[in-house]
Image (cartoon, rainbow, N blue to C red; front, top):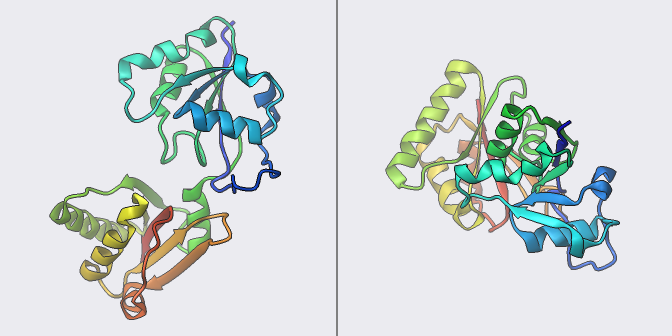
Length: 234
């Protein structure tokens, strides 16, 4: 009988400078000896701070990230086919949501391996909850195009979707480009459209602000280089 693939969330924020602090990850981790991760060093640190009870030096880490090739996916879960349970672990938040790993999960399904998602934080869900925008109809787009004119065109298309489909539009950006994205949003979208910026979620610097574009223009807001989720609605 095949093993199972457990999808393991990690808290979206944790103060690693506090050497005494630990965080909760589902106890299932204490019986897993193989993990599919984005970065081995980070994964080791996460497991240790979560109180992982097995010998970390005997734990097997298989790397899967944005640089991995699709043909490498099956090899990651071969041990599952032989009966071993494996964990797919995010670096922050939920696996496969604004995070690599969906091809691993799809491959598991195609091979008849049971996939078990575990509960935990998701910055996208937290931002939507806190925005006051439509949580019944929404679309997450990940990263928008980088080229300026293409980005402007995409933003205007998203704005049209809001009014045509009554659908919240959600996207993210690399923190060092937050200000650039914000500046374009308030320049090209209608003043009546609403923008929520949810940044540094679950941290002491957490901020969730929803205002019309017209109000954002007046505020002269300066974005910090922190993780942020952007949401648009009417």
